[in-house]
Amino acid sequence: MFQTFQNTFKIPELRRRILFTIGLLVVYRIGCHIPIPGIDMSVLKGFFAQAQGTLFGLYDIFAGGAFKNAAVFGLGIMPYITSSIIMQLLGAVVPYFQKLHKEGEEGRRKITQYTRYGTVLICILQSYGVSIFLESLQWGGASPVVHPGIGFRLLTMLTMTTGTIFLMWIGEQMTEKGVGNGISLIIYVGILARFPGSVLNEGRQLAAGTRTPFQGFMILAIIVAVTASVVLITQAQRRVPVQYAKRVVGRRIYGGQSTHIPLNMNAAGVIPIIFAQSLMFAPRTITTFFPKSELLKGIANWFTPGALVYSVVYALLIIFFAYFYTAIVFNPVELADNMKRYGGFIPGVRPGKKTADYIDRILTRLTLPGALFFACIAILPWFLMRSMDVSFYFGGTSILIIVGVALDTMKQVESHLVMRHYEGFMKRGRIKGRR
Image 1 (tube, rainbow, N blue to C red):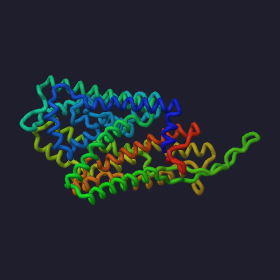
Image 2 (image 1 turned 135 degrees about the vertical axis):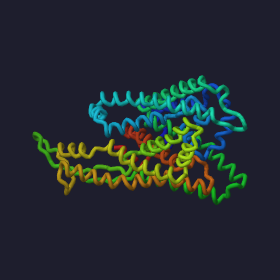
Image 3 (image 1 turned 45 degrees about the horizontal axis):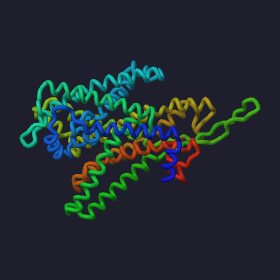
Image 4 (image 1 turned 45 degrees about the vertical axis):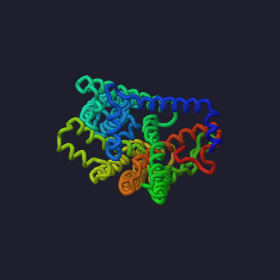
C-alpha cells in the first residue's frame, strides 16, 4: 500500500491533479473558519454546543463546521445540490429540459447555467432565513448578532451567497482538473474534519468513566461492521453474460468472444443519500422565515433527526433517488441497441427490445436491496446514538458518504496507475467499476 501511494506521485499528471485538489480543499477549510461580519462568536458557540443532536448539528456536519461558525461558507454546497435535484426532476417531466438533455454538450452547458442561476436564488432565500435565525437566537441572555436589522440581513445574504458560489466553482475545478468528484469531495472533507474532535470526545468519556470500555468496544465494532458492509454492497455486482457473434470483414474474423455487463447493486453511488439529505433540510429552512409560528415549529419537530416522520421520509427519499438517479446514469435501451449493432446478445434473450426489458428488470430488482440497505444504514444509527450517546459524527449518513466518495476517488487514482503500468491499490484484485 505504501508503495502504491509512492507511485501516485511518480506520475506527473496524477501528482499535479492530487496537489491541485488538496490545495483547493485547504482553501475550503480556511473559509469554514472566517465568520460573516457582525457576529459575537462566544454566544453562537454556546448555542451550538447544545444543538449537536438536532438538525442544526446535522446541517453543520454537511457544511464542514461552517454553519456553527456563521462562516462565509456557512450554507455549504447544499444549495447547489438542491438546484441540481430540481433540474434533474425537471429534465424528467418538462419537455424543454428533456430536449436539452438530448442535445449533447450544448444542452449540458445550458442545464449547468440554469443550475447555477437556481443556486443563486436558493442561496439568497436560505441566507435570508439564516440571518433571521441568527437574530432570533438567545443564549445566556445575549444575541449573537451585534447590530440586527436590514443591514445585517443584506450583508449576510451577500456574503453567504458569494461563499456558496465560490464553493461551487471550487467543486467544478476539482472535478475538471483534480481527482474525484469535486462536490462530493467538499462534503467528504467537511464530514471528515469532525473526526479528530469526535475521537477525542469518545476518549474523554472513557477517561471520565461516563462510558465503559465495553461500550467503547461495541461502538468500534459497530463502526467497523457498518463500514465493511457499505463497502461490500457498494462493490457488489450482477454480471450479465454477453456473447458476440463472429463477423468476417475482408480476411479477418471479428467477435466470437464472451464477456459480461457489470450491473452494480448501487449504481447511483452516494448521490441518493446526498440528494435525500438535502431535501430533508427544507422544512427546517422554511421555519426560519417564521420563527414565531407555533404550527411551523411543530412541523419542524417532526423533521428532527431520530423522529419517526423524519426517519420514514428520509428512507423513502433515499429509495426514490436510488431508482431515479440509476435511471439517469444507466439507459437499458441504448445499451441494447449498441449490443445489437455490434452483434452482441445475451444467451436466451432476443436482441433489441427484449434485451432492454431483460436488463431493466434485472436492474430494477438489483437496485431495491441496495436502496433498502442504504436507507436502513442511514436511519438505524440514530437509535443507537440515542441509546448509547454516540458522537453525532458516527451517523450512518456520514459513513455512507465517506465510504462512497473514498471508493470513487480511489477508482480514479487506480485507473491512472494501471494505465501507466503501475500496480493498483489491491494486488489480488481490482476495485470494481474501474473498467
